[in-house]
Image 1: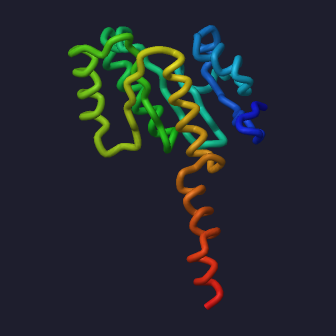
Image 2: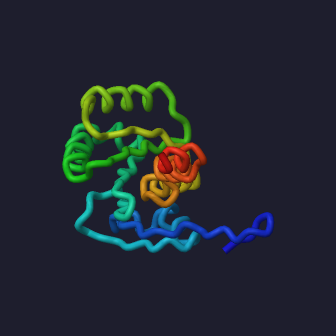
Length: 164
């Protein structure tokens, strides 16, 4: 727990189910160092990270590997989005040049209308920060919609409305 301005601020900790292929990846080490519960599974798609409490799943793809095995990877994406309702594809590249943007466009075109959201990322720390932000806000604890709902129901306008 950290203190800021005299108030205690609770850290958000969650459980992440990861494919065993990511066991030695920098992302796994980063999540563990932040005290998130990381569980490994052979039964999930290679490269996947599942935040079960938030109901979302991420599929990590290195764009260099993707360029070499595009057709096989498109089949993996298809399987992934059929299993996970809220799915994100994280395209990892140090620099997103014309080749990377082209492959991103082809993936978007193929999966247009699906529940897949594609996010370009540059490094492991950015990837972890992004995943945790999305997972926290989708979990309900830090949800924008949840906090907006709470603010609305605690407002003086709402209280006056309930009295009438």
